[in-house]
Length: 469
Image 1 (cartoon, rainbow, N blue to C red):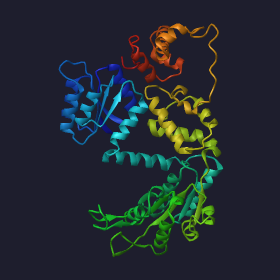
Image 2: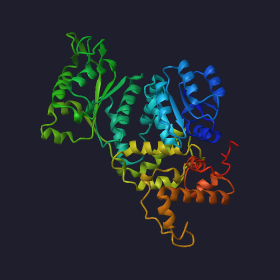
Image 3: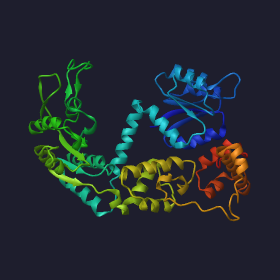
Image 4: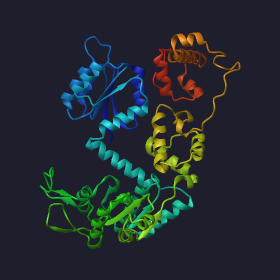
């Protein structure tokens, strides 16, 4: 099941580029003009739209399509795009119901981020994303290193005991909590509920409300009864992430609940009983916090029946290739070929901040940037993961130019000078590669969509997309 998306653009090359960038995640309905777009609106049940404002049609423009889209799908998001920023037109589109705006040219990463943003409130999107994320997270616990295998084995042996996961940000504490839930579910022969909350972003009252719920009228804004997570997770698992950030007052209240497994909703005098297992995670040294008086010793004892330390990615670099291939398969939908150099660069990178989560995000970026290519290439990689190298001096006969014409540079400015230089390079390269954008992109070490955009920017050549025309 995919989200149905109308994409309208009268530039056939740009429309194809968007199709290549989005086809893996969405069910696409492309249109080249107003008539085609209206026909799609009339026959398809759409979840969203990307609409070009400038249709080069004397009778119609994208704002008219936006109006018709909103008539049929008033709650569905629409993104407008244009080759130039005309502020009054953008404001008009927003008043007509547009959710966001993109100025051409834009890259695949920006496009997908915009779509994720406008779809984030869509119930269908949340269901799809949660199911996908849970699948990817649960299955990302792969690797042959001793540390990760020991952690997995400990979770399997712990069964339904209370577990405390230790590890840096991004090492996979949530996937391990999901693994623990899965282990007990398989033993019981049915799926156990799994609910989670991040303690770092809640004060005492917010935590009480999230965990135990409230009664209608308990406070301003409590317009209906609300079940807490302990009730929603009844018979299953409640995962408390970043428990080291829990305030002392909240720690005392939560300890009382753990001792009795009884609680009251806020504003209610009815005592309730919960049947949940509590799983916790932290990137803080809780023993040290106990010594400093910042974490309760009795609470620490309750939540740490089993303690599992998850090693950071920089200590299990032998697993990077396995994780990389797993994420490629997850995001691309198949085992897409890739340059082996990418894995070697990832192995050399010092994974200090994001660990496995950052690796996952890096691979998702690669898959997005390589949608138009048959394989994932080093040229698709973010500069963050490339080793810094001083540029070689362009002083020999192979250089773009032996000297900079400072008189022209000062007259026209740096940006104009560089634009003329880039245009000349692209024109020369397109001739030397006999018009093949694919061969040219590989030689210049950039992705095909990036090269298409640059050629289009300077209106160079009759750009063709291999496999489409």
